[in-house]
Image (cartoon, rainbow, N blue to C red; front, top):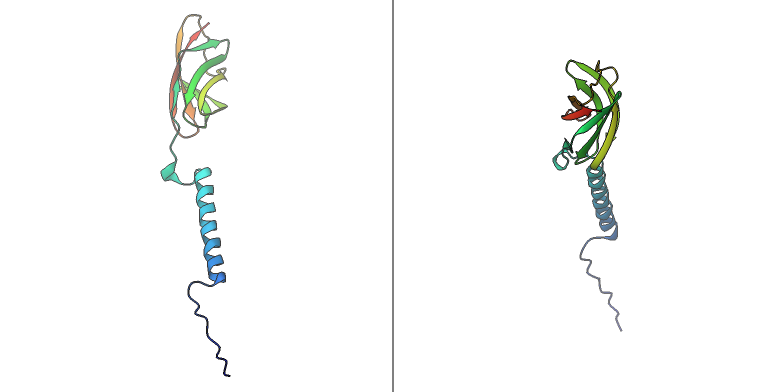
Length: 134
């Protein structure tokens, strides 16, 4: 009796090639997630918008304002006329009550008087706020 060996037909991808494709796909997906999470994909990120909610107050040399921000951004400066001082406050998404020192701007607040300040943001934007001295 003659026994013939039959060859098995190998169709499809080998295990090594399949594993390689899965590793490459995983790396690409991980990179996309990291770039999106850290804002490296400019097309999917936007500059936060910041606006004043109501009127601010000035007490002594402290400006207190309520700001609404659509994202995280830093206040890096305050301007009043030709004068400016640096600041360092972080705004998060949502409503933020912010107290900023305005000493160095050359202002002696008069109770009842309104003052307009320009807040300089870290993204290059500005927001004008109005405050009444108390």
